[in-house]
Image (cartoon, rainbow, N blue to C red; front, side, top):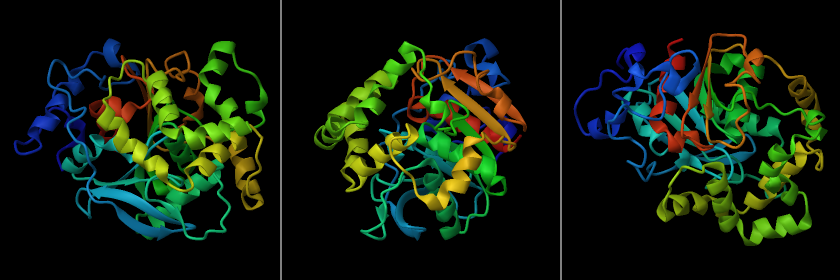
Length: 354
């Protein structure tokens, strides 16, 4: 593995050279183009060809029993490399990391990209299991996956549901999290705080959460899952010109038999409209208190993400007590790893060298 502090400056020749070319200018990006706090890359690669869209597959998936699930996941890179776990959001899947994973594998990382519960090839082991999607159980799924794969500690990186999950592990089980990359910063949920209204523009952006709170919304998600997801993609990432094939590759994951139940429970639980599992009440109380995150962290914001808070990361800066940097990515929306794979990859490598 090359010196990670030089990542983006030096790459060997070979089959991966073309896909890595977009990283060559990242380390020299001016702060005004990419960062709010600390050095780092923006989505623009200094005039070189971008990596985005270079890959269409993460390869054959693996399956492993972990906790209450049989988890489907992609794995790349050397088996003895330092572990990185990449966590997707909704309405997305592991293909958000289709370009990031090979970049990290080329750097010598063991890259694990799991389908979260209710997505892709991940299945509940018991047909009678509660289709629960409260925040704590999704984090526990990742801990169970790490145990099953005998990964003691990993860099965790994610966006949307994946950010929240990675944040929880970093806060509650810091011994399992070497470092953190979190899009939109600190997303651990306090359900009491969620009862308070947001400014109207922000409320409008969350329209689907309120839709899912209704029976009509349940039927709409069941019957129109692909069209609804595509609408959310377009709203969340107004500058991302994805093609039909890119969407279809992800949309296949929505055919999971538990997809509707998991998505609905996640959003209804966050709004206090659905109960969680009482076994996790103590953990949820701890999370509701807003625990600090002390592991090395880089937070990323997509400038064009409708859910990015104002203030260049200031809204959540106080929640991170360890080594920290924040980067705002110009011209990028919500699905940061798929829209800006070079910048996301560089953040992972950089935080690992803090």
